[in-house]
Length: 82
Image (cartoon, rainbow, N blue to C red):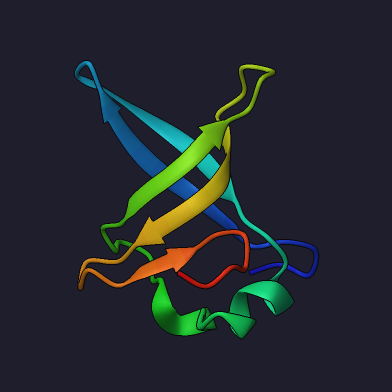
């Protein structure tokens, strides 16, 4: 997590046989820690399910809605509780 917002780089999306690199941005680390996010909960190589909204400018950037870890724990990307 960076100082202004949470960012996950290098998300690989598989669509139509192609692999694409994406950056996923969430709310501020302060907001996310209030709803249970921890710095060490996502590690390089982890498989995640991400629900996000793609940027309107066509770049490979998305605004995080929610994330589900491999252990089926779901976390909100806006800092809201489920």
